[in-house]
Image (cartoon, rainbow, N blue to C red; front, top):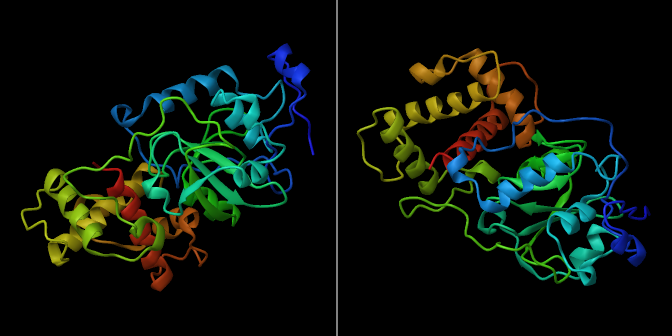
Length: 304
């Protein structure tokens, strides 16, 4: 177990606090493409998000080294948590925290998300609520802000590592992030769709597609959560737009709503971060369709 060499505060050095290693072996350098991170606009970001960006800009390394394996240390330092909340590993901090829910979409800003991985576990802080933008110390990142410091979604980290999600709490062994507690964003009375996580379409999923399609693609049908030809065409366009945001080759399905080989190849490629493990061959099957729904669910959860 590593000790926490805190060069930034002599008072804390003298306290000799051991803090928050993360589970698993030290990882090879790897930063994932932003396949699991929401496309955010600045007005959707919370003050906690802004503080995290500023913290990472000021501390891209941990005491001159990597943040990798120091997830608990990051939570403690960034959250300015009390010394009483310090624990030698994330899993020990988890055991001293009160888990509120296993549903990451319900997590407010400032919540801590927990995973069982390796000997020491893993933890991250929710910056915008809903489990979509989680600040963490790892190399399994959707967006890197330094040396193994940045953000991923709950789903993205779980899919990248195989870690078992343990739920979220508002406290880290009794310590809380100041200003936390704002609920995850919703709009028009619609909750977020769970299709992002399970790939199973339902009425909320289709209502969100129809709402986005009316705003962005001229859809004139009802917002009733019942799919049909126009809703399906809009669903493909929304998915294609998300795929195009994540790199190339570009699919023309964003304009015409007609999926082709490039579209399906991109679904399979981006789908890796959503749990897809099949071939990248541009030929759709049940697992590709499931990945497609997850990607679209992800997009419509963040579209409004």
